[in-house]
Length: 315
Image 1 (cartoon, helix red, strand yellow):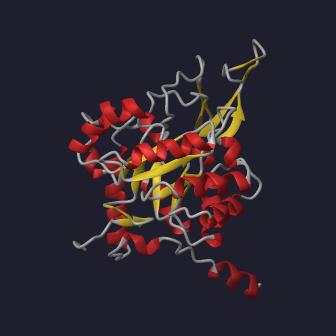
Image 2 (cartoon, rainbow, N blue to C red):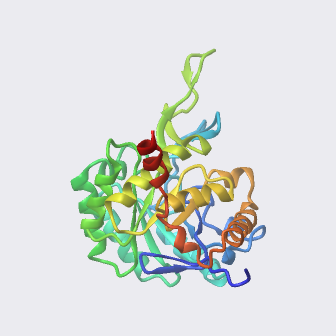
Image 3 (cartoon, helix red, strand yellow):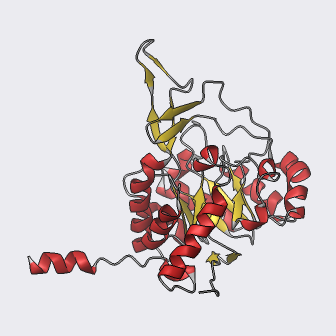
């Protein structure tokens, strides 16, 4: 097949393919411009932005774990005004589709960030970080409360015409209920999952390996749980879903999409292979050729559970 369509639609935002560089794992995008043609990605999700610059946590703040990585960066960043002045012009020049990840200690901060970025040329969508497990104030407080999730999404929705995409935490009992809260509040899509709250201990010193004691677990170790959560949210809401969590090869992308994701974000794998994007795109094209699929979007939510039922009936 020669006529293959990799494009997807996420809350009214048309992407050339479903691959998005995950927030916090790709800098602001420009750092990779010499190694990767950023315009070949579906989009880049920026490192999280507060109104003011933020130093984050002191080292040690990254620890390798079996099939994963534990981090407690603490949302270090340059702040929204420096991002608009220093990073956004270059990203516009490179033809990047930008999902701006915004963080707030208060509801008012989310609203003000949304207002500022809505007036900036080259911003295509807002990803609301209400799920980072590495800071005590704001963010995760909203993301672990159904009213809090509804309130922050609703407040941002009122001040911007950009697609609003809350990033949900997996550190709750029923993630689908938070997807419904976001949908009811006016979200255009949802992204999930953020990292899982976890910790590691140095047994020789009996001290935590991270100065923050706990951090967020990412990487292949979390993928099966993330896929399950995407599937649960697909059953609960009609919103487009951006799935993420441990994607390292084309089969992982396909697994998320079959479970119900419209697009995916790739994070930890960037630290292992910054050139992963070409391999992922080639793998998707090969899959579509083998299965005679013209539009990749057709596989979203296409999980076939009939075999399980047939096997149970026949037994």
